[in-house]
Image (tube, rainbow, N blue to C red):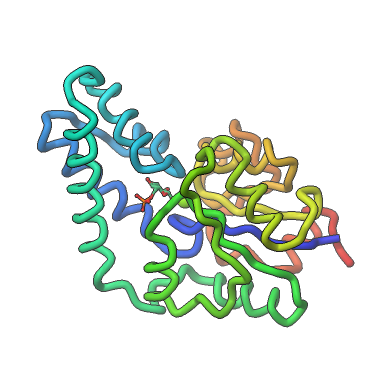
Length: 222
Ligand code: BG6
Ligand code: MG
């Protein structure tokens, strides 16, 4: 039986994954590193300082910067990212998400945000979606995706067993995290990208995410 639905945020609830990419690409460019959208797939779902590390390794620059300089680079990226969020409104919620959240609330199935982002509360506020979520995982101090911890913490906050949870993700690291947590993994995006990470169901758009579809495909009809 379905006990909780755990949502990634960036790239699942709204299109903020594109703003992360823009802000990382600009930061990388300022230090002479080029990143393309293929490489960006390996950044999705990855915590901020870890993302910076991956970019530096990609550019062969992992030995160049002190901890202090890395913190400055990450801060500059985040400042640009937050400025890109300024225009976010409820209209930016991906199609089908509000309807799914509504259905979950009617059925009293908790929805929890399982995001690596420290900006999650800000984004939910801008989208006016707070009221639909039972909780938001605080990613600080727990291992990031692809480790299962963020999803396990989300299940705990919902009072649910991992085996009764469905996790929804747009990233390879996130799908791996859901599977490592022992949950049913729904991928939003390209089967060629998310299939190899172990997604149980892949939808090309959030429009396909109805509660009925989740219940049937996860075999959790009540
Ligand atoms: C994830 C994004 O949701 O959050 C990553 O997919 C991002 O791209 C990570 O790096 C951390 O986000 P933030 O907002 O705390 O820098
Ligand atoms: Mg994501």
